[in-house]
Amino acid sequence: MPSVAIAPAAPVVCAAGGQVAAKWAALRATLAKLEAKQPPRPQVVPPPAPIDPATVAARHALARAHSAFFDARAAKYALRDDYRTQPGRFAQLRAAILRCREVQATYQAAAAAFHASPAGAALQAARAKYPRF
Image (tube, rainbow, N blue to C red; front, top):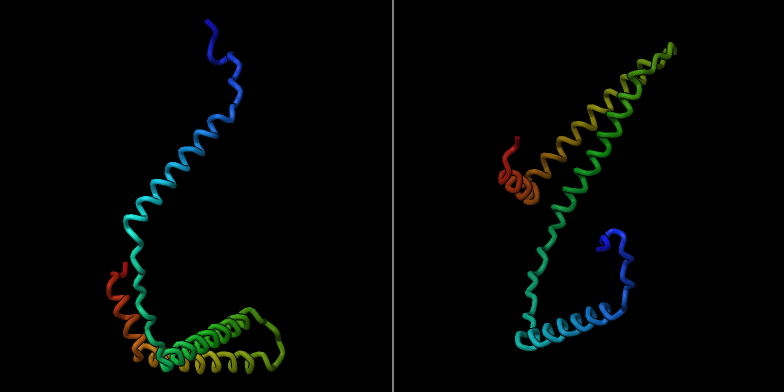
């Protein structure tokens, strides 16, 4: 008795492809009948919530302040490894530190304004749903 492993493979015949196509056609016909019995329900899409211009302004101010704070802090940290012996080095470092503090205060004010807005209240309510770990 010949082994299955050494038996030649049967040639692929297109008849199986015809059977698959017939099954797909039957399936499509069945689905068409079912759709005819139950017409699709209209999708009810709620209208988008109105955008409050004050909230948008608060978000933009917060984003600008955060970007400025990030840049000022990066500039301050870039001067950390600057060991030049020129007399203007400490004045430049002091200016960077003062600029960073000034921008940080602006960022804190923008964050307080954002959290006082309705969007900030909604953010805090969403955060309250999930415990911090």
